[in-house]
Length: 337
Length: 294
Image 1 (cartoon, rainbow over the protein chains, first blue to last red):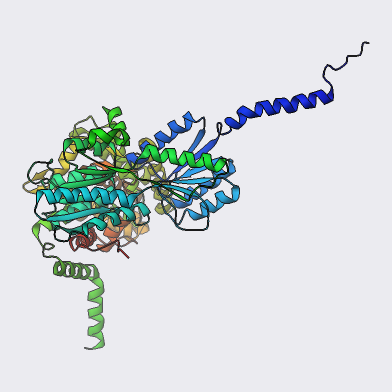
Image 2: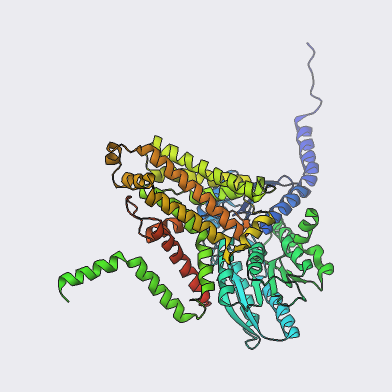
């Protein structure tokens, strides 16, 4: 029997394999972040902001070649913690989380830290702790200040005095607190122009918002300055103002100066219809980009600040066409049309 | 004051504690806001109490039989989700009765299991229904906010003879419930079953049928409450009806309905619902700072 000599010696195979691995490694290093799996843990899709947020995330993840795993906790902190544990067990590469409560999420961050999985908080930062995670957040206070400042300037231009009402969000949500503070930062500077006659606690609940605003309008039928901490409450605001006979567009007598926050498609529609005067917009596209960029930096071993801010912007009838392309609600509105 | 007179006074106070609390609430808020004690604000309070009161009237029937229904908030969410997603194109005169029937059917499911699984407390059965129905509604809506058609929103803003539509609806449910409980054999059977189901059975009352019926009524009222609520708030998010069972049960109990059955009625329940809303209304009327700024 003829002995078959190996064409490749062990030595040449080893050298060749090392060279092949090195050559193949070049594109692998370049493409290292493709094939990543990221968990998207939402507490709800209660408002158009979150619905659009998750859709933008899916599209952006697909573009980067990432796989996403999704879960919704329905405002249940314990359930969300279990979801984090499940994602850790599945050995995901990153966890993007939108927690309900800033303090309740800290054990989840610690669990992710122990597992060496980067965690990014989207739109809501956690409470202060020694656990490490990155939060992407709109500069709520500044955006709300700018929004209310626009309304104050309008009020000054129109003359008269104003009775104001603010719809405040949930006390456990730092965004709600910052938006409320941004509102008072500005109105407190104009005591002769604006008197805040109602602070409606909504707890991000449409029922409570409607009842609270109706009560406020009953107590103060002359409310003519209204700010909501989120645009998702617009349907209830419209209904309450219609019942009170105060739903009038700009230029009509009885128009209530109205400011919103978020920048959803309903806000865009009300801006062009003239019912909404100004809206503080969170730049959702930028925030998703910042969140995914943070993952890439963390995977690459870079140090990332614990808080990254989206400066946002204010949209009004005056700058509508100029800035609406950055308004996520406008994109949704276009799709609906 | 003698000891006997003191005890009598204490008893009178205890028996009328909700009424006294109501008067205290009225006095406090009236002293803090000059717009609190007005006809307009009273109408406002009753309008906003309407959906809770309707649901509480339904649960009163259940409580009178010593039962409980924790699924009322979930039933109202399911009904409204179906209305917004699948019945939006139908006229209100068709879609509303359909939603009411859905509530009745869901109540019948509760009633069926309560009757068939007598060893299991209604607390467990209706708690399970709460999770099942809320899960079903979240699945249907994909946890997103759903909107109802403009005719329904218009209905929420409609008044007849100066009285909002919601109050008419509430008044109709209240009147019917009061008549059923006070003037019909079925009403007396409900009390009898709540007092002592064994004795009621021996007296010839069809106890399973009465129990089944009260859960049907409760489901129907939950769906009607949902309709009244959605006509006012125009949109239902995933929190719609969430934990509604608490104010609903609280309204009935505040109004004097016993959790152990056999005692109470819908007049007290309505009073309880209005008391709860009066407190919420008063806090806003007085511009109470619920989020104190430190």
